[in-house]
Image 1: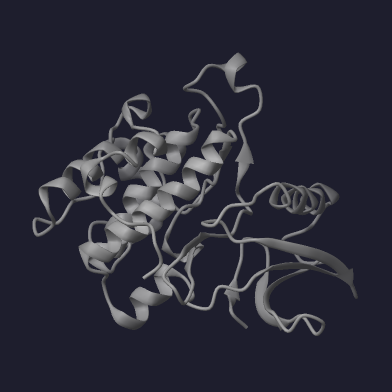
Image 2: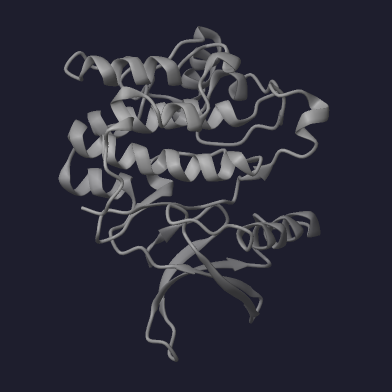
Length: 267
């Protein structure tokens, strides 16, 4: 078993015709997490959604099947594991490599956001790294498309509660309307996760309920370490703007001095 996804377990599989390894996300159609047909339908929508994505920095969807009351989703196998697992094995990631990873995450987010898609659960656990250092955004179980965005206003979007608390933007925790900028806040939290080796806010709030209340009410980002570069601090300060409308889009952050000069070529 490789790990857990939003709705089920992930296994390593082999395509017996091509010889390629695959990640197989297996979901029981009778699981307690799938108590009604609407949840099954949401999984089918996720498959349909994944079929539309094709980008170097997004894990590739390869197909699906239903067998013995299990839904199997076949995905590109990314051998290096997640950023979270890399941190667990090797410790915190230096700023140079963090910049390289962050640029690739931004490239993936730009691709999604240009298509009015928000991931809604950006964190180290959902970002994979292949054996050449190429980043792959994964686990789109919470992702949604911003429908009729122009009619609703550029700053508006969803109001549902999705994501992982320590990485979530204040407006999401308050269950207010949010859009692409919520992913930018989560990106900032993921940068902190990489350079500190621990989840954001974890030194401040040990309990999730406490974290939820305080992050939502404080309206400020997690503490930024003193030993990072001035450019990194500025980048993070932009990600953690309390007003979502003031947070730069992924396209603009790719032009930030901390990111712009970084090569996206494999290591």
